[in-house]
Length: 198
Image 1: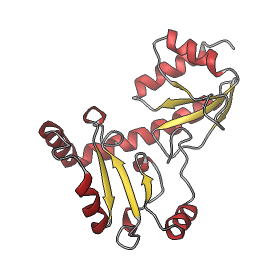
Image 2: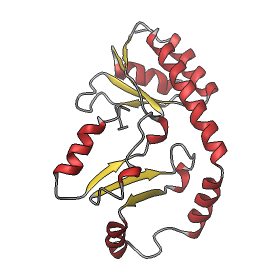
Image 3: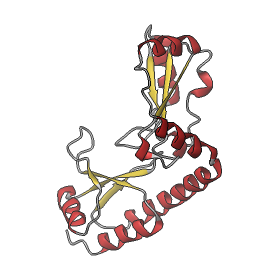
Image 4: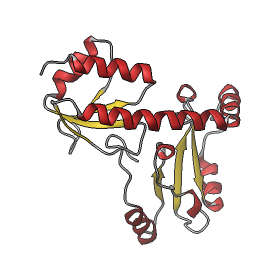
């Protein structure tokens, strides 16, 4: 799934690129845990030019440590290891990551809660008359098209609610990006939007 649309690329199209080029293809799977798409990790042994990136920032709830992971064919990992900085990850970051990775049950609970909230939020947002479209999502956020994105954005900022105005992104004209929060945070957003006067 990509940012800002939250949509997954068609798997066959990505495979066609991987198989059709004589260079490294990098697939960013930062949001894969929120998608029905199986991702590309299982193809690493056969696709020697494939690099898959993932992060501990989203589904693992470890955004503060700013740690990502690179997966690739062992030969490609060996080449990449030759040019990376030595000691590029602090000991504290490693400790936090290892502790976080041990708690897979917590991760599963978070993912389930986010998916439920995402579905509920999408349904709620569709009911507002100034919301033109709620796009399907494979991520932990929703992209919505509204009549006046700047006005909605400013209104929510005044209320202390931060969303992202993506209306200046090509093909996202009129769109806002809303990250799925806790049920309390999402209710606060919905209650604020109910009082918005276009």
